[in-house]
Length: 172
Image 1 (spheres, rainbow, N blue to C red):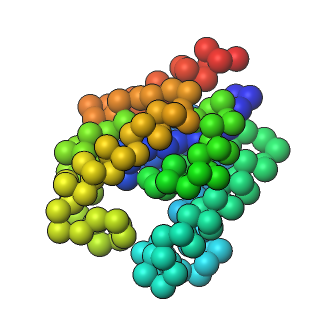
Image 2: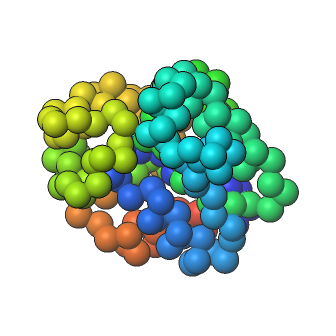
Image 3: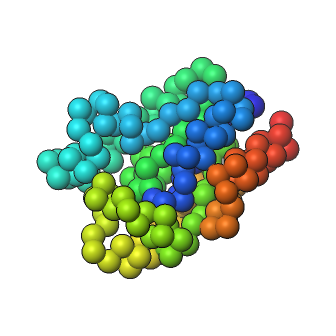
């Protein structure tokens, strides 16, 4: 693997799980921008949104992505679902050759997130409706920065990681 892999997509697409699986398959370090932001801020993503707002979170997220990409060796990076909302992050992502869009339908994402929506600051009572709106808004942005799109509604984590690994081998 000669390039870092950066996973983008709607919350519930499996970015964190696929990153862990992919990192294991490739034997490389894995980063999660949400966890890096939480560590830096000493607060959860939800707490950052509540205390400081989305704009502050997006700035922290951009800096976390920059940090990950400064690694000398190739890595796998799981990003937050809204990373493409920030123009600086989009520009940074668009300049990378290893961005993979994990495309999930809003219905499937809602099913996957059914029991964990309390930690998702952009979701409320109408989880599927909110995810549908985010999908409409962000879908073109994900596609605009991605070198590969993988439909994940019916793929397992392992199958998704294998698809990305095969793609990477074709890149070399």
